[in-house]
Length: 484
Image 1 (cartoon, helix red, strand yellow):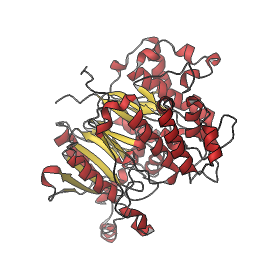
Image 2: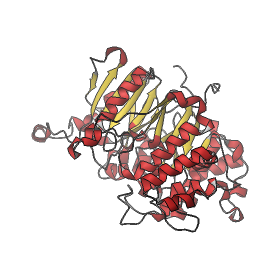
Image 3: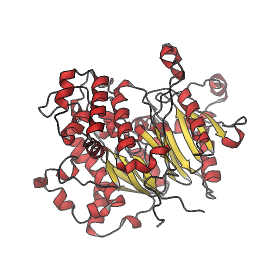
Image 4: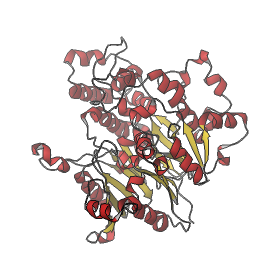
């Protein structure tokens, strides 16, 4: 195993995952009401106890087994006993797992709030953006760091009174920032509902000791000059960037999506920032339709192996070229572009001569072959097994949004049946997480034994939140891919 040479370094989407940031579902998710769900970027309300006990807890367990097994191996019966009351999973409780590999944001927030000066500044900032009175700000300053961290995240005081809106999207840690080599690119959220998330993360990255060695490598994108004077139709000139639109596909190459959440101007700023700071040599801009269906590029495709990608067939080469359409239909629809993807690749050494790709598959094929040196045939697994209407249905519930624990081993939702079938047809084992954990706990297998596997995660409630496990992770450290 390569020696860990840094606290944070990510040079691919599929290198063995060694450290990441997560946030477990907090009480704020249980405060989302139908009338505010869409304002808070949820399509539906979720059942909090189910999302915790029957779904997200499995995510925590499988992450710990792969990244920090000493915290969990041989202890599951004790951890999940009714008498334990889930205390192992609760940030702020003395029995919380507190891993420096599977790092809980609430825990980091608690720790920075122990510093009086940071506490005063962050409290003032939160109260300012949430419109709190001076009296309320003084009252909040009396809380312990543990309770204040919970309040900042859930919006709820210890007496159960709701002080300000929750930030239920905080579970989607991918969007708050992205590790690119040994740099961190911070987000600028597109929606007001995520403003407090970005503020909390800035304070954590700039003030927590874990990130002390990274502070000179944090990239923040500036707003455009006089951006506040722009009319609504000038949204493309506003700088909004979310991590779901950024993929580190090799040490020299980053993809940036232009989407419903990431603006063209943000992509423009990011290209210059990454080149000027010598972070990468290539940036590919992937423009996708600005539709809620897609949201970020990682809802349309993610990587499974060097030569395997999962994607929505609607954006396949065959679909774009309408190869299944008759000649009349092909001619009539040939110039329609609202559902097409555009790809422009900029190279630092030759900015004036970008490379264009006609479709997504050509880009991904080029990454596998030229960036990752893969000689094997590049394969695509399609959402819903590329069968209508399952392709669109399962993409909506994040069939394309998988997280690689290591090359070829990914986490995905169990509800996406047709996509699971497509993985099986591609030669992958498809295993429910509960069954896998039992084998790991019994010593029947180790994580090293697991190859080419889709791990099915329970998802009835998690899928309502409109984000998969790629969204619910911010990798800080992955092992570099070995040379082929």
